[in-house]
Length: 439
Ligand SMILES: CSC[C@H]1O[C@@H](n2cnc3c(O)ncnc32)[C@H](O)[C@@H]1O
Ligand SMILES: [Zn+2]
Image (cartoon, rainbow, N blue to C red):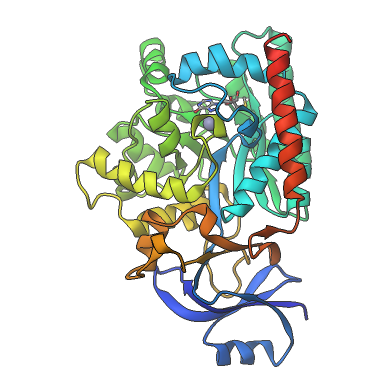
């Protein structure tokens, strides 16, 4: 047997309790074998030897889930700031993305994945281009992901629009199950306004036939919601329902401007919402009604969105932002408490993406982040869950484990060459900007 044993720490259990425990991992299966006091774990292992990971002074939590990003946008971090969504995309981001090469996307994805491993993220959802390259990075780096090619049909002729939809469906079919099953896929139309109705209708029908979920941006800004209401006389979630895009495996990014009927319909359909508080604040998109969504029974996950609208991929920041913004949105300091955002960043994320992980219990996927609590900004420890939500940073993560494999040990990432990744990405970003500026 091939075991890993995380020893001497405190462990965040699925019910929110924190207990002193060891975690034994079956590396062949990629699952948690046992959680409990050392003698119980000894017994579960039957005296078998195990590689150890020291968690003394630390909290062992489920690996974080970044449920909506565009990972290669790390190359555009700090490239265009301080604008609302529509002009930001049209004036800055889309012209730059038009110059991206598959090599750039691979370099940007490596940088993003490195940043995520270093901040305890073990699973993410990615909507972008050149997804074969992103999948290769995920495979090498050792995380889990739900990947999809993002479709935009506005401004394209019929043949190009059809080709874009076909590419998203082909990616969803071809990459599903890659990286020993750590990669799953989805059909990913960009949004209900940037993809034409006939393409949405046909694409969703084909996704259903192929058994892959749908992921899109929905109800992000009033500029996006209002034209749908004006042109169709229906709210975006009703339109999505009409398109058959509202299923229990589907997950929508943002859900900022959703009314009561839309919240009820999302809950009834079982469609998850990925809350992206930093992006929503930076682009001044609005405040998602997180408490109302959760109270209605909607699965709410957390996402960073791309690094150009955040500007990092640290899910600890997202937990803190979600708690703070949720209180402001509800005008109630108890609206989105610490335990809620920790749940959204772990089990909520795994459930939204339909990926294993998110809970530390026997039989669950061995996706873990070990957070070092021995730091001035984390002293004293009255409540470790409070610290995860309000005080910890991604840089407090000491070890990261995914699928039973150690991806980072004592802050050294083992699956990527951090210096080389950073150097390559910086060169790719500079080359990209030179091309955009015509140098
Ligand atoms: C077609 S691939 C994905 C596409 O989405 C763009 N994008 C990045 N952030 C956002 C956001 O907050 N809302 C909508 N679209 C966004 C990204 O630049 C790609 O073009
Ligand atoms: Zn996005």
